Length: 177
Image 1 (cartoon, rainbow, N blue to C red):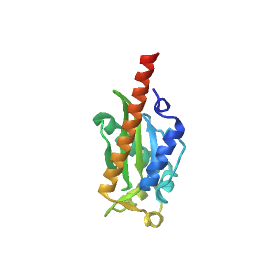
Image 2: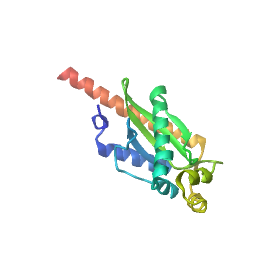
Image 3: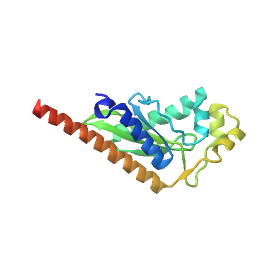
Image 4: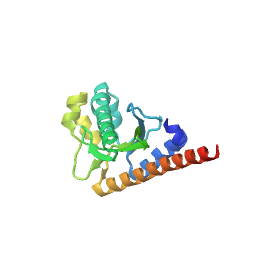
């Protein structure tokens, strides 16, 4: 089973874009290997592309957060809201068809109200100059806990609808086939 069994790739891209438009977060659909299924990119801020542009940043901040959240949602079957090591919001919503875990819809890149990017840790991991980090993170937008929860609910409802439509279609095919 693959993501394109549920929706065509262009519909997953549309969904990523809807999430970004609704929230400002960088939204991506990830397979069980933690790799994005589309090449669609809507950066939420100026800092993340710089972090991901370093080997240590992508390996020890972004990939670690993706894999950690993916393993948690796979076990719990429920969405999760956390922060990455850079201090930015990261959400993951699981995609299951029956008992089969396909991956997650993830979104990241804003700050929870009252939280700052962790310039010290970003510097220690990536080697990016702290002044540069502070400059790049100075205009990162914030999001409230309520807004994040509302977004998670929106993603979760849509994922469940996509899966339900797929299952109903498969059931209909098996009854008529």
